[in-house]
Length: 223
Figure 1: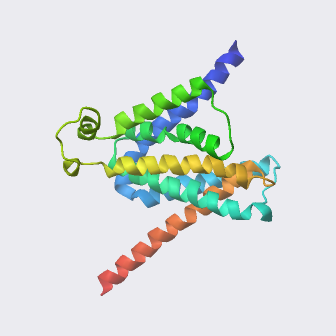
Figure 2: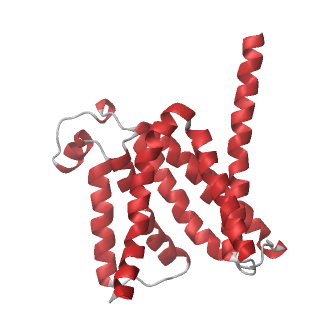
Figure 3: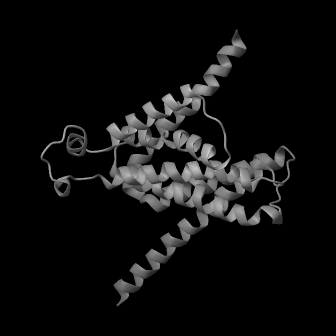
């Protein structure tokens, strides 16, 4: 009974931690900026994963046959995902943002069906339909839904779409693509090692962008 309770607790825990992290990120993004928060989320976590990989005596090497897909995986799942996520949080609330980002498993299911031919049973299709429908009703403005569903007289040009919601959906798409890409990246390389390295290398474009912007702004002030 204790093991069953522990298993359920460990399965639910990531969702609780994910929700609290979204709420904690909101003030950090406001003060530090999206790129800096994304960098600080990636680099320390990646180093910790690599240290754990070394202590577990797992292979730290990224093999040459996986290198091309590793680069794509790093850009999409680390750099793009974290950047889109932090930009999205800066424009939306943590509650709505966390709901929109949770569209990722639904997108993964559809991509796995399209790319790998993974089967989805009728109950699964029904769950996908309800999940995607709920996200549409939550994410789209009320005026747009009234225009689309109730045929209101609202002009589409007058509807204010929240760009933050688009950032969050882009983050969900990036994470979903990353979930698919890691299967192609780990043909020979260790998955835990790939995870750590892609977080470390994925953080580098972010800090480079921060430094270039600050150098440019400093030069502008000097002129």
